[in-house]
Image (cartoon, rainbow, N blue to C red; front, side, top):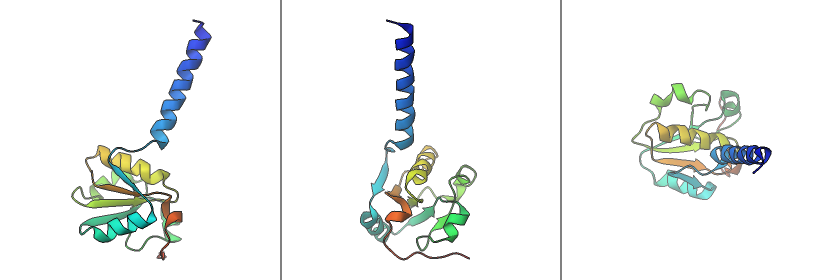
Length: 130
């Protein structure tokens, strides 16, 4: 085999792996549409709702009852996320909350739920922060 061909194959494999790790499924994460997310929150007696968007995004409107723990701050604020609660995560589109779920999973939090499509998929009323 030609060395160039082998290098090209390795590059393609590395790119594919990178893409998969960024957008692939998170093991143990309940990836829920808006209706199922809302229903799961209503059924949970012991939950925390976390908006992982940045504070300026959170101020523009959030799901009522959400705590704002931005993804950029999550590594140093992990202690604020209880391990014994059902954790409900969302962001703007769903990418940051999936990354937050990966981080939380690695820290031992297992009851993870994610709003597929992010806050844009939320059909309910939003609360505004000052």
